[in-house]
Image: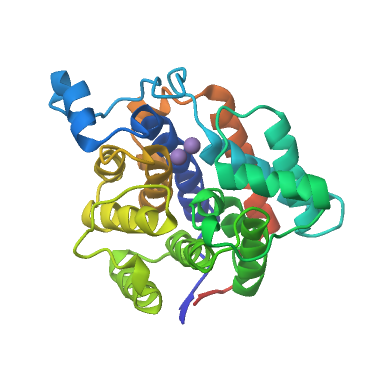
Length: 314
Ligand code: MN
Ligand code: MN
């Protein structure tokens, strides 16, 4: 357990916005190389040294430049549901979260993972807020969208764990998904309230010690949507690349689930460097409406949290 004095609001705000915009930037950059192999990426971007480094859209979803995918829009849907619950006096109500996922799905998102779709359909048919534990639920869909919970519950670790698991299990009920949602969530929360890398390293070591499946040194080299591959890739890129841009570029050039690994590396690295140090040339290309929604929502979610309390993180 580490105690942090509450950071000044301006510092916290910079880190929180950095995490949320970093998530969207990694998503927008990585969507171009999603489902490609590193070899295909090197060939396709041979004219720029074999490295994909510009937000250009395209990819298998044929995105516009600066457009984001489900990783970002599902996060926004979750954040909106948390705010709605508070406005209605219902707290962080899981049914409102499930309703938010339904509304998101009915809005015809550019992409929706199979496990997310199955979970949303189960809720529509049966009204259940969680399916039974399922070996097939080990994808990264619950992990990719959890940042709003981390922001809204800052200063309340028990509340964080309760709401994070509840939102996760609407679509994913698997011990490794649960572990990743909590573990990566605690890491981003520690960065938000003031951990530097020397303070964070023992937390990362503890997480990997508790869940050996996520060991990432030596890096096994897979970046698929299986939550183990995703967590290994995200931690490998985040830990070995101190610079935001290099960390995200490293992730998305591994291909496979590049938008999601890019998003999660962007979230952690963005919390580390703060919004003020995100690359201007990438921010300039990010979809304007997404940028506005993220900025508004990050402020509203922090306002729900107990960010001004003395903060304890695991
Ligand atoms: Mn996506
Ligand atoms: Mn993806």
